Amino acid sequence: MLSPRQVVDYALQRRALLADVAAGRTTLAAACDAGAYLQRAARFHGEPMDRTCPVCRKEKLTQVSWVFGEGLRQISGSARRPEELEQLAAHHAEFSVHVVEVCRTCGWNHLLRSFVLGAGRTTRRRTAGE
Image 1 (cartoon, rainbow, N blue to C red):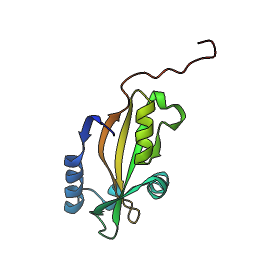
Image 2 (cartoon, one colour):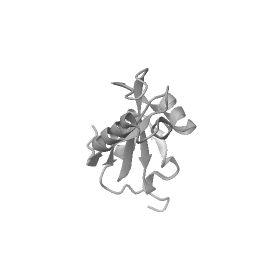
Image 3 (tube, rainbow, N blue to C red):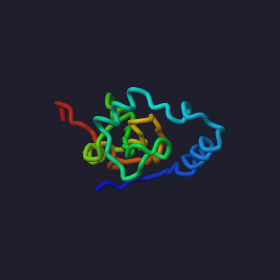
Image 4 (cartoon, rainbow, N blue to C red):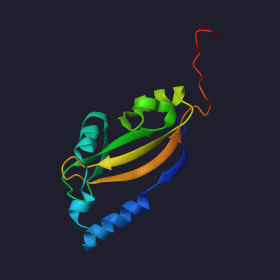
């Protein structure tokens, strides 16, 4: 069971950006700028959402979770599925997760929330002499 800490919700920023797009203060190209790496992560590591894209309204959004942290070493900065987050949380002291919504049709993407996961304790590996 995951117990996220230090949760930050970006719903107000999302709403403001969508209002700016609707008013013409922000271009569609600026709002729908998901790169190839994010699109690929959405395809292979994303989870489908119940929400339709607020820009193109053609497809359901996909949610992608990115993990960051010194203790994660080479996997820091990569996309992970929810079941992988549980495994990482059980084995690592602390790392942050950034959840992004992505439209695979028009490229809309926005950070939904961020939070910290982990066992909250440092896990030490035993060396051969211990």
